[in-house]
Length: 461
Image (cartoon, rainbow, N blue to C red):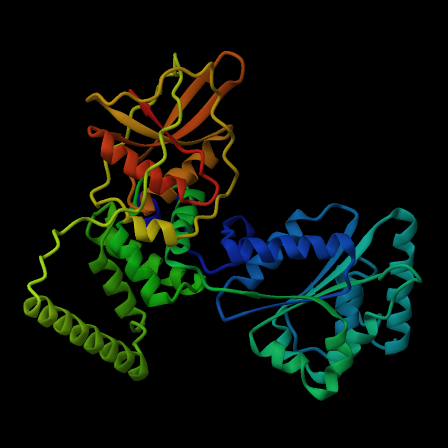
């Protein structure tokens, strides 16, 4: 019901591992790049681990979608198999035998050695075609020891120069301990790349939610307030599967209230309905913070006493400065006009400099440079309207994702279209407008701290 109300074309927070919804956080982007590298280089064994719900299966499916036609793939999702059943499933996925043939029992009497020989012949037949083969096994922590040993034997299928079969084991965190067991030393020594997926940070959680809303087609119809996103991250600890559960329930609450703004109260209700508790602080951490506060208070008391005794002249209160703000980038003599109307400002205040400085904001696509004529004078110190240009994109969808990410961080982001005579149409993302130059410069400095947007610059309108 709430999907129709918000105009989604599909469920934005479904639990199915749809690869188009993969959000490349810093950790997921690194894992994605490492897997692609290992597959191209035929590195042999790769192990990817992560906590429950961190997106391992979605990552695997996204990798499979990126492969070319010269890479034959086999994906094993059920680890509770015998050695023979595993070999039959691999041959089926590679297209050597059909599912109908297996159902008819054609391979029932074939020995394990014959299955391995058939697989080896298939892999050798790929060499003249300059093709390769990839085997991905999900939930590998549940594989029986004898099956893991069989997988090690498959890794011995090779020529004098290269491996014939690339194997990726994907599993929960205890897969690392399993591979370190004495009986699997030979397999563990063959692992060339290991990577552990991490949960999302607070800023990545905001960008993740905005990404899924945009992909589902309702990014402009509904939004989460920054405080609501704070609660989403705290309840879920940045685990994508839990984020999906909480956000889906929160959208249902927003639909019931006929609201296009998801509030902290809606997130609280969603988490309560899912029986999710806010992660508590340890007693040791509480005691340590209490001791630190006591020590700081004692130190301040001592300083105050010394000041009174020696009649120290009190210091005037001054604001903490983050250092000089860089001069704004030159604007253009005839800057292209933004033709689309600006959306209404967000209700919440912009994110604080500390949050932005500590955040990691992963882009779905690298922003292209803004098409520019010859530079002219810098921003004048006069009153007027100011904006911060963050980036320009060829594709409107890529620009829309950045707008959602900036809004999730509390910025008044907007999307406009720029027409350039020599470079065509660009979709430009900006923050503002601002009535005060100083506020515009402060947000310009904050946006520049976001990874990939150090060239954000101030313009007048």
